Length: 209
Image 1 (spheres, rainbow, N blue to C red):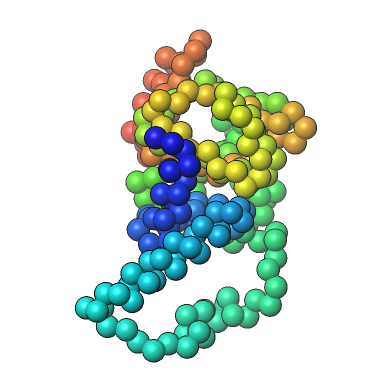
Image 2 (cartoon, one colour):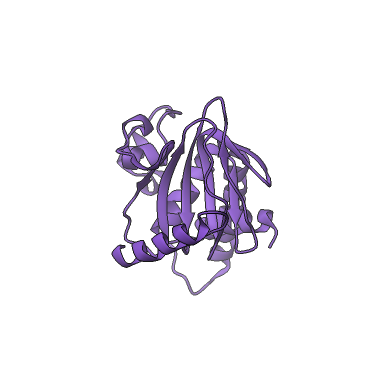
């Protein structure tokens, strides 16, 4: 399926409130970092609001704008560009308790009670992930730095969505490395010299989730 359609579907599902906790966190971070996605989200919210008003069976209340804004949000006078949905949840990226998977590649599991697995991934400059595909969809949002693969280069605020048809080898920028927020719906499928070993390791690890 076209990646643009998948991105728009994610934004629409977020606007309609139909996403689970992991994808909601992921989508809200994407909207925070990507102004075009945020504008599209507002368009979807407006469309859905109009549809709600057309539904005569839904009772409506007269609300003031203050009723729709939490006290915490209302007290914020200016937006702090250093504070994202991710830093609100997990703190500064520099202070994350990263777990090293192999040299130059670390991850942080959000441990959210959800069928989707939300992770932060950090790759040092020039480090690559093994050549792989996906049992389900994989969502990758660049939080800092950039990475490249067979499909192009992705920078801060860019979103990549992969499915079972995509095989790629993400490689972090040689100058700045890369930090990404990811969601994998199902286990990764590895290829290449160590593919069989890595797939066996992934299979064994699945019993301890």
